[in-house]
Length: 364
Image (cartoon, rainbow, N blue to C red; front, top):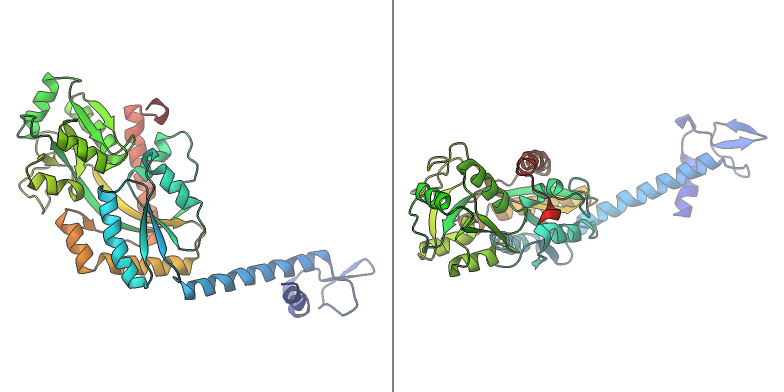
């Protein structure tokens, strides 16, 4: 590095307008002459340029070699939930496309914050990826302080897919429709329990919004992920869950759960017989979830480009497309800028819901 900066001292053109040499107290604007003192400003600039050149060269080499080892995909939720299912489906095809294994690492806890923080603080080399959900956009408002900057410490790679939730109940509850369920909930105010994948998660806030709009009250039972919530719902420990199709449809088809309505703006092609919540008695209610991919913010752009291209290819593969669309998720495969814009809009949208409901993480 020292030799390169010394080289720059002799090649930077005089027209750069920088005080290059000081001779007898006067500033000279010509090229450095051997044997004459070099100004501190010029030497510092040359060193800075040398460092920048080395960084650019290093990033270029990194991009050309990427990936040269396995990629870790941090999923901030336990195994068995929708996010885990999606991540593992994508990981398999991503590994095939990139020629290196993509390994899912479940780091559950604190509504996705533990995993997101781990990803934000990981080396920015493209070998640590975060796949998370809408709670990532809810947490900045719900929590007074996060250990990372949601918009500044994690760079969007792609919005992978969007999906509606489905309101599911345990078969022991006599409700056969959403209207019947609302009537039962009103008659048993504060007695029914509803599960969520965690405080501040999409299912939590989605149900809070539903209760507000339907005029009912239930007791919230938060879990560390959809998988655990599903287990207790199937066993009858809780009565209701704002579930996602990815995790819920197998149980619904098996008759172990009953589906009442979908939360999207239109009926799902997977279960067209199910009405939307708006159709079934709560006009104006629309709540959807999403899956998104991030990397540490300083990850070189060429690496992000490579990862994004491989992710889009994986999403468009027949195996992944069939898996997601059959479970009611719609492939998005957006580019980093589109996802960045979407994330900002999501943060603003959920901030309104959180503040209206008066929710604060310290009260959980």
